[in-house]
Image (cartoon, rainbow over the protein chains, first blue to last red):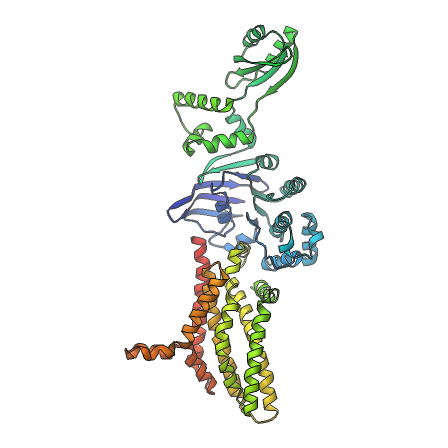
Length: 342
Length: 233
């Protein structure tokens, strides 16, 4: 549906987007993730035809955005970072204007009132946009993107300024729309991307450093797939017992956590799942297990690891998308482990 | 284009701008008419020419927000990502501004009818003069639009447009300061006021029509380029 090839964009001498390529299939919901100034909005602005680019190509539904911009734009609904609203217009009037602007063919009044109900702004339809709160303005902007029911929705931080209840509503709406739309969504809120998107593209300093499902990213970066167990037992005996379990690399005690209970950190060897074996060992020992948890990597940790990497080459190395010597890898792992414990 | 035209035209009357501009036109048209009427002159076309001073000061107000406001409020994002061509956007806005300007001159038709009911008048000379003023308006609005598209601030746009308007209209007054005769001749001929004058003298001069229309087309084209350029910035 959306095909971006070798896209580069220069602002003067500043390279805002550097050789980015990806393709998005129909019906996918893709999350754009990246720190401020990474180039997310620039890429979105390019796909929607607001900005042009220095190099590369962008096609939407097979239509080149440069060769046939009007046909391509007709397929896209765009909600920019700051919703583009005429402050001196009323909500309904604004949506009617967007309807005319996009030359939509659906029955006007019915189409607009359906959209207003969908994003829950039908109660403010006759109010001036300048008198609306940020949350309402955001939703009016969202409604504008939905006018004409375009195949592709590009949403730049769609839940900014909304209260938690509205955020959940909009998220549900995005998931619902995702069934028959292709959606690109950018966000700083990582849990949002995790909740809505099945694929994440991480952008840093203008370059694409990751393109995968949140789960796969977690797996690739999960050096820290250790387990924590809290057991009522004797500290030294338990360390010895747990160390003897097949697949366990090391066991450390994190000290007394509760009355008589100790907390242990169990690090397995690479690519081994020791949860079952560890549990049966504890069961065998007859001690009482109070809690047992796995330190899975969250998207937030992935994001921080990748974007805080010294440069994008290092980030790619973390993902294993680049060749590297064993030696370097180990020292890097050490660095990150120490970061994490701190 | 029609969507943008409608929005912009209505937009003038959502803010006081449209009313203020029209009030200025109607006030001065009324004052000039009462003067002419008290002298017993049936010449409405000279009244129209006298309006060029008012036009100089009001066109900047008409055009100041036309392009700059969109950019300031980031609404250009919705315009530029909609299936509308840049030319469509520029023309929609241009015609909305021009319509406000034309409505400003509407009472002159009533004045002509009033005068015509007393004495016989040369209707053609009135039509030429009105046509000349509309062409002048189109040229000045296109210049103002280009200036407005270059800045995000309506105030800067208005001041710059005013300066440019005074220059292009009245540069013939400075021609005597220049000793080189061919330059001073060009300035004399190029000043908008000379073209407007010929329309007021019951002359339908094709070169002046072409002059105004090509100025308008050139600046509208530059305005489209200025929008396009921003995408490449």
